[in-house]
Length: 183
Image 1 (tube, rainbow, N blue to C red):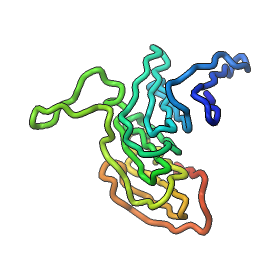
Image 2: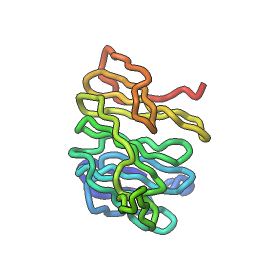
Image 3: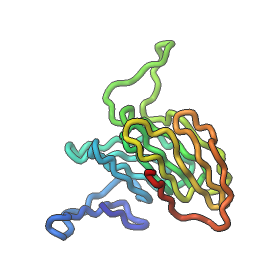
Image 4: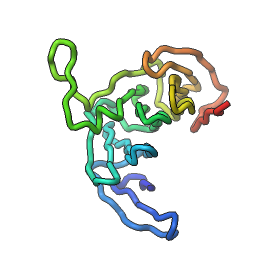
């Protein structure tokens, strides 16, 4: 899957045939992509600050609430497909439940009021400038930390479920991408 800058389409390529299979239009311009391997869902970050989930088996689209004020600049999916992390040029990172986003049922809170499944379950808001990159631990059974960098040269290692900082690093240069060593 490939998105083109300033266009609301995704190009689908076949690895086996080595050619482009389709060009699929979407309702908003696309800025970032991530693939939930076990769930066969393509997660799309829009220029308008929304997540669009494309279930490849059914073709169904699910759209989140517009929780980011600006473009979603980076996406990460935990290896166990439990959470989607979306970073934005508005300096925030939202934690989303993948299950809640694709569910047909509406969860309720303890008081019986409906809680929107299309809203984030948490927010990490310690960065002061645009998010450049997000990655998370590699454990399929218990992914509990994320690493994020922003344009101000900060790098935070933080707990996904509580959104609490575990460590802060000040980098000498702006980082555009990060990877986590499985060891």
